[in-house]
Length: 474
Image (tube, rainbow, N blue to C red; front, side, top):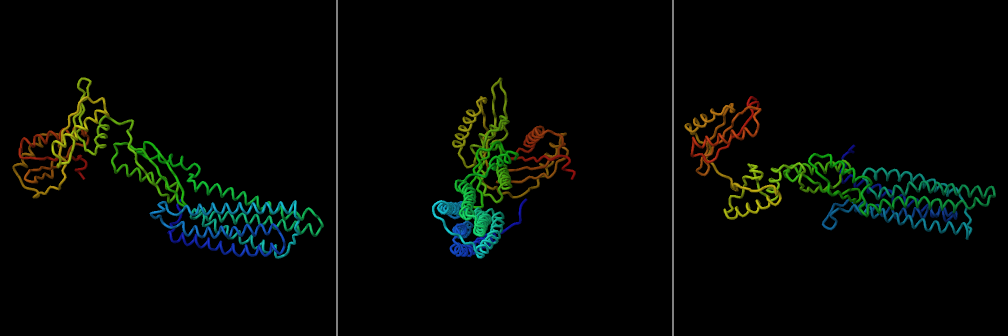
């Protein structure tokens, strides 16, 4: 389900605000833990202080990254600056691992080589309690904004502070055990503090491993698990798609970039190809909201292409318009006749050379064709000027007389004569029966045009627009 529309400015302000609050909270907690850790001698608290200190560095890096990551793309960073968030999370992971190394080293030293006296105080418990409350508060707030804007840097901070809650709780437990050891003279309980520190390091290692996998995957442009197959499945549901040649997904911060190549029939129009490409992009954005999607349409021969489709495909490949294709079987040999439109400004020599090359290409691609005969037509390149309709009553009567000889024609209307560059044009609308096959309609039009020219030899061009009988009744 789509969430509420949030402006880019609102997103930036919320991300910066929560990141800055995290920095201030980290400063206060780190300072308190250092003071209490030194005063009590507790390795657990000192390890937490070191952990919080690195969290402070991480929070500062996060604040910097969310400020930079939302900058728009420019000439040097054409995919935007979102990778800054992923790199920030990677640095935080490294800092956490460094923390673990120091905690484990000091804990082992205190357990086996150098005994240190730990003196739990009320302040130690108060500071650790306050730390747990603050960490819980900022972890929930960071996670809410991270989930809202899919920010990996803020999510890394949220994970840090959620584990701080558990690690701080472990330290408090260690201090309680040390206090119990002092009170009831149980020597082995005094070792609870370094053991608690080791447990803290274990928690940190676990979180670091989770963050490392996420950040390395993002930096190496790994696609989310299963998303590629889901995208391909959605694309294949779209009418007009013959195949999916390539799907590439990369992530920059909270934004995904998707590059797909989709095969379509080579006979589809440019407009149809654009419609299919638009639907492909919309289906992908349903799976990856706000993704930047590039769709590359690849022309491909359809298995159900007819001979006529294949002829048109060769013409289209050469940027030529072909119509009135006729194929005859002459004793087992196929003969093709076609009309081809060429720029009217071409010379006959240039036009003939283009058609000769086209016919050779058609025979090469369609070896079943034996011979080809092409009628060359001029394709208008200029807008013709006309003096407007002219009244020619005698010609109109002749046209009406011809039309009445065709029983399939129910009605003739909107008859117009006009002169264009001194030549006579005729256009008219003919109402015909609804159930006439289109091939029969075309034959009737052709016959009528021939009869019109016999009756009115001056005619240069005739255009007949056929209409169904039901349409004429509206």
